[in-house]
Length: 542
Image (cartoon, rainbow, N blue to C red):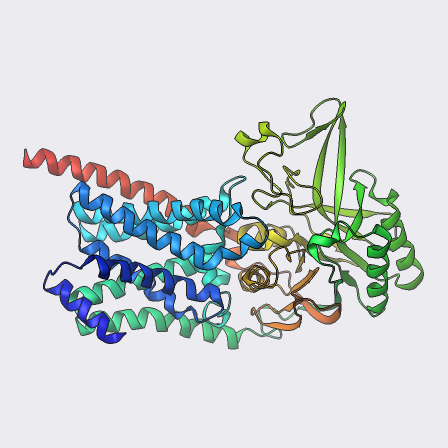
């Protein structure tokens, strides 16, 4: 491998053109290096993941013919990266990986081609700044995109298996990881172009120093430290019913309720919270009168007699009726009235009060459809069992409160969004709870990384995480991003642990995705400056 890299570097130094075969190999190499962290292996390949593609870019002239040729190679690279990492969506729906690949490739391609074009017509420094900011701006916009967001392959997410290396996410969030990866790739590219010893040293230091800072933060971060000396604890149980996703909505409601109640009985009386999965309640619940639901009433009665100090947080489907007038943009018509169907989490205790959180980040194609496709009804919706099509969208991240303790009742896909989860912390959540039903893709990378991404959220917000998934993985994650207990795939049971509470706000919790916002502004300025530079250069030459 090293021999091949040196050979390619010598070709660049002597301005020799790569053969088509070499370019294909470099594109495949980039896709492979970028994919490895999402396959559960080391994150280290991310630091050179874009290097082969940058080397291909360096071969081309500013001509439009060469630009179109580079567009083809970049498209090949990013499509392969997507196929290698999100193929598992196919298990739920064949159209899923196709659509996700199209939109994910678009953002990556836009940023890379902006760099390529600028690098051929303007100073190198402007090209590099454009590359970094345009890429992060693309990730940020994809995160914010309504009804189309699927930021699975944001470069900063590639460290979900190596949280020891990114403890400083509490200051930067995952966009800080993207910034790190892009800067190191540029330094490695410069080192390949010059083959100077100092350039290789700079590249190595750019990797080692942030890791050193992260390790120092990891070992320095202790619950009894000065910053978090007032940390309290509470006992939490997570339930894993293990009902196959594709059979869940065909099972009798009574059988599912009996399964949940038997697991609830296994939780210790000392548990202040018992966490059950997304859509665990096999009954549609009136959103305005949840206490009238038979299953809610059954759980509340049990808690009142057996576990009066416990709150059950569980997922369920709630319906809000509006009458003959459309009460929201997402409302659907049923006969002569409108209603919204929500994917919700409910907080049920021994009182008659039920707290409700509506899922605010919906799964594209299954729970949300772009506005311009909604007129077609459910024609473009993916049916995974149960309710599908456009669901109601939660507009707040309000924690549930019990015994004076506040927790975030997040639902599945919401755990992928750092700033969204930070909103819970800003609203007073002392710990993060996530309920999920992510077995639609089988025993693949899908459900494993939804659990692992919660490790990044734990670091960003310095909150312990409890997660309950229907078929796995359920468990607990510390503020340092370490999972302490797990119920693996296809296991039924209950786990109990004491988790820490934290009322403090990290820098990231306070300011959210500021790196993404700044990158967007700077990328726009870079492109405007590039246009002005080209106009001035043309005028000067004339």
